[in-house]
Image 1 (cartoon, rainbow, N blue to C red):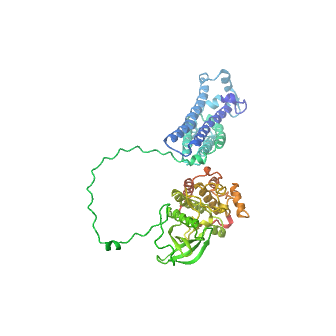
Image 2: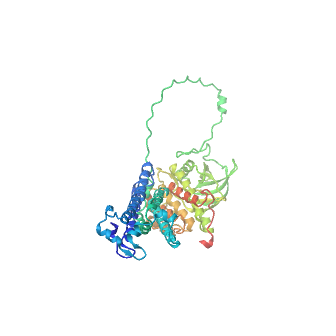
Image 3: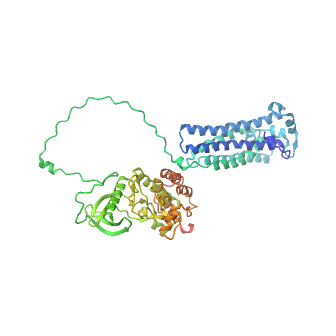
Length: 558
């Protein structure tokens, strides 16, 4: 068929050209295999169970080893049969056989050139002829397959985009097996076969790339749950004898028994207040200096005079019912989250000037101040920042708590270089009422997710967008949508889902940043996926994910 499609009677000969054409056609078979895998992954995503892995392995073996080897070996055997005078048994017509006698410069008679001589193994390990001829065969029979191997690997990696790369081994390991099986081909036949095979492995990348990776909605789809088998009811055991009646104690002894101290709620619910904390005339917290002033309260550095420790005291601006509910919600949110990179809450008390939240005091500087003063971070520091903050947010989401205002000023880097997520002041548990005052903006415009700016309900994907925007700022020194003249203009840009134009293009994290800042929430990768990808990149770079995040890009490289 290859001779019919492409067999010009010019040097080096029609059958030599047909051999290269056959190699090109055979190269389309592995490309078809990777194309099939890419199409299957559109529906399965990264769900690699025994069935999908078996299917992918079978596709790789059939399309990269079995079919190409059968065709390549058949081509070589056909030329051997023609050279031995058995061309008719190989299925060739009399007219086709007559063309084998054509003689061309350098090549000579085609049937001798293609059907006689040493095979690949003999040519490489037991060469005959001049040294220059051996160098020619060494380059052609090794360099061409190695180049083809490289592009087969690229096809496999392209088919397994947005997921683990290791399943791509099915294809390149199969190709290595094909190469070793092909050493029985005639050397000249193999040279022209690989000459046609190599360029079409390059072209085979195009359809696989056009299919594209599976959508994030498929990748982020939860695994199907298998209900456990119903268990047999346990055998009833005889009940133990009833315990003896409780010992009677005098009333005076009961009066002296200490009562357990009230605890802060460990899960969303009513926040218990310490007895006597309401309407207290004084305060156990001595204020040292004001740390900040926000929309919902003023934060002070204070000293707990009873425990002799420094704390952060956040006091509501207006002691009305709505503000009190906000503070209680913040206390519930923080009490429900237990993560080393999240600020901890100690207590909720009534101060003389309002309801106050007592929190862990973190020494350090906001990420915004660090980047403004020292410049953007490098990829390693930003990767560590992204990984730790993704873990902190994931811990909050597991408790049903959304942050909703992740931004550079709400990430504090302590003197040891570790990042901490602070200010859950507008956090709320999923399912709580929004309780947002009319006209009050939720989040910071430059770092607000598009769906939040449009008034849609926030979600874990919204926090993921804001975290990606914060990491982008750490890498570039600018918000991903750039800056606007007024907060309202920035909010309008977010509501319009204006494209992100200030991403750090030279960063190793540019690809996943672009995906995480997708305007459509369902297309964004989850925090768990992002954390896995970033920690994998750090591991390949030989870096620990829990190191400091204070390394700054030198000015000459910015």
